[in-house]
Length: 192
View 1 (cartoon, rainbow, N blue to C red):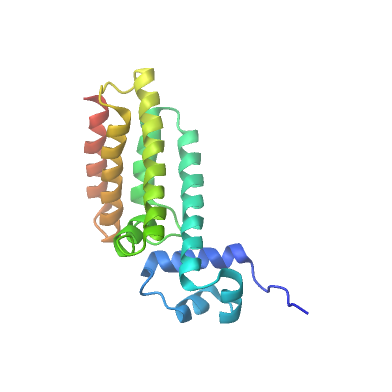
View 2: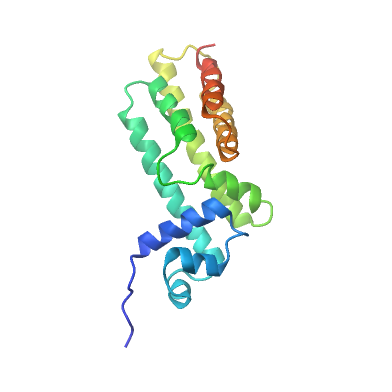
């Protein structure tokens, strides 16, 4: 007779995601995962498969969380500029239960060159953020809020590159005041 799970699958996946985010894939051992997730090794394998499969599921979890939080913040914004400022502030300030930096950035740097499938997951995360920026910029241009005549998608690529740089510097514990200065200067491109 099969035993029922004695843990919440979503909760332990979240714990694995946070550990991978904090330590990276290579530095996170199966023992680290078992201890941090608070489940037995056999349960980990039975539920999530091997370490790589667990990591892919953790990336999907991260993507879902980021999409929900970013979409929610943008939806609450009263203007296109407020929506973009929200994105920049979110990337700089983050939220309470997270390690610093960005799991997609960390993954792209650590594993992207060696694992095409994992690298593609990181790139998809980048693409989703660029599309969100493109949509916001396009709305701001249509409403006349943004004066720039630059192509919305090209401007989104530029702003996204700035966001990625902010996430990397955040991981290195650069002063947040400096990061906010960089963000403010970058946002001037919307009205040039």
